[in-house]
Image 1: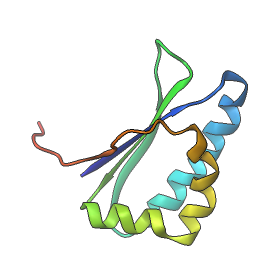
Image 2 (image 1 turned 90 degrees about the vertical axis):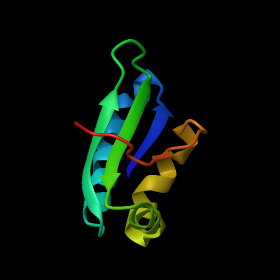
Image 3 (image 1 turned 30 degrees about the vertical axis):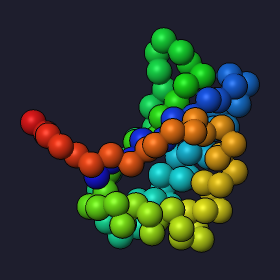
Image 4 (image 1 turned 180 degrees about the vertical axis):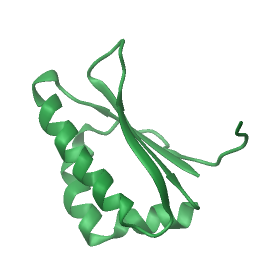
Length: 94
């Protein structure tokens, strides 16, 4: 499964956000079931970012989010998250 969380980040906070989100990726990468992850920024709307992670299953993703080490670095960024569903079941790949 993949998880996509989008963020609205004011331009003056972009550098700090990228560094903090890299710490989130490091924490998530240490979690069981983690496959891959990346942080992206739109080229057309630079204040819109996305954290994209891939997991062996939804349970792994949810347990990782509940881990203390992840919550410590992830929760401070939650205020910038766009409120929308973010867990996706992979239907087709090439």
